[in-house]
Length: 465
Image (tube, rainbow, N blue to C red; front, side, top):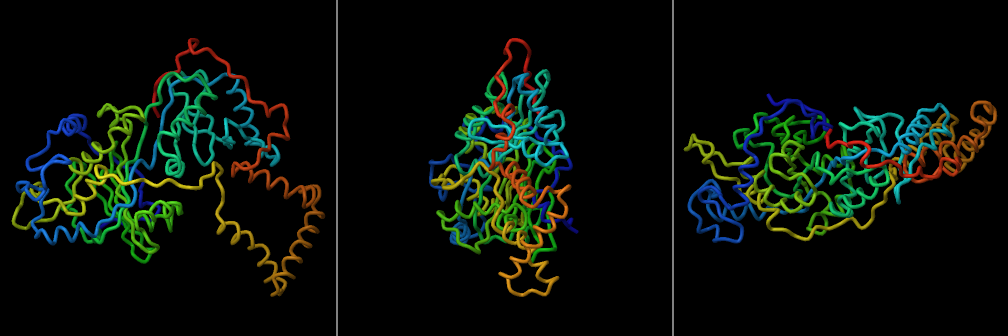
């Protein structure tokens, strides 16, 4: 019996480590063109002239071509990127962040709203808590920045997650360059940022029944293979996960379902449409997550190296590390089974590039959606109308405002009137959404601390999280 899961576990929690072996050697072989028997280099001989191998399907060529014709790539690239910056935090900035963190922890909503930090064009929310070994957290719609203390020589200055939406809007190079300029305002950088994690992905349309696949169809170097379901949705199958918990893992899942029920990343629709996606089309995502140890093995530690090696790395991941095969009942040696035509198309996606669209609209602020505002925002009005038996919205809205004013006036000591109450709530949400600069209410603190510190005074370390 396959394990059940909530849809939140389409990308499930990592729970065990899968062994990784010879990644660097095999990737180097691929870069040198040392491919297996019957495999061809891109741009080489016609595939129809290749000798029999596990790259050729046992079906007729017309059946192969039909299956491949059903495949439509939509988008590929780097979806998640985590960078680690060696160096040390400015000491004066550490004191300021301590003060802002205390404001965020205050019982006063006005003080909470002032827990903000501006760097360049970014107006960050300063969190009221830290993370393991990183006491300070800054966030907006571009970055989640975790900062260590100025004297934490064994830790990096910052560990940063770049949002997938920002990557989709400006690309990896521009996002990384902007991030470096932000980090330079926070501390003394001790070198080029290293990659802590990156996710390579491909979004595509095809007619394959991935739910109907047998686990033996997956040829992989990982030990763990799991099939996931969520019985709360009409079609409960949500995907396959290979190598969960390892430094290298794979996820194949229905992205359209994940958007609808979990992530709500509807901006992807704008990116898919230029490649022929239409509302209602089922989109699958093949994604590989690579952690720091894998990048060390393949000697890719920085962003330029990753960008230059994407195609080679993708071919290794989809041919040597993981492969979808067609079962052959006449052959008990599974490694000789033919590669599924659709998987062959998946494998070739990065070496047959197409123009990757960018988001035309992006904001650094974390804005709530209209659904959240206009559905939740009316709940109090409709509750009052139902309680008082009012069925006219204009009358109900007027009665709501009248009673709300009276309510807050009667509780002046607690809420200081309706207008002040609204001002405080707007300021709080402005901090949360990165839209309102509340620091004007604290002129002495609105000035950025002077950059201080000597890069020779202490070792910023080059650790990773």
